[in-house]
Length: 221
Image 1: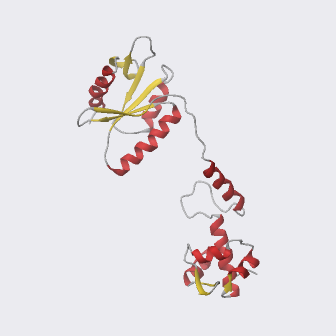
Image 2 (image 1 turned 30 degrees about the vertical axis):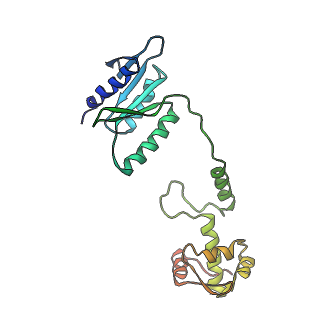
């Protein structure tokens, strides 16, 4: 497929809205004019790409009304990409058109305009809590591997105590390690490191022993 396949439906869509439309005006793929208004510019691409966003940002020096246009795809993966690229377009002040080539229908995913970010108070609070609970700085920024979270640090502390002390009550583990959520953490057993031995009593599982050995952890002194 070529970018030119997108032009007829985009042109028809804009003409239906009262614009006069012409292709390849200066550096722009599509320019649409309506009396008394700034031009609408549309950049066409056969798929989402960094180059498409670069072109859109460059056209903002000519007009604030810049759209990116791509053909509509199928499947969950494409819908996820559409959502992510729509959010990116909004942040850059760009509009986004999706063209269904089967029938020429054009959908507006977002219109161009200034971006007004909305902060999520719960997400910010979770970020701050994790930062405060994290002991030291055990990770490398940018890694895609196993992260050392505050929760994992607490689990390791509980496991190390059980490695040295043997089966223990949650209250004893809490007192020895300073992990306030020790009982809940061992009961939930997110990593499979703990085994319940009786009411409120937990021991280290073989999985937990293997994890500590792999990490080079020794019993708490």
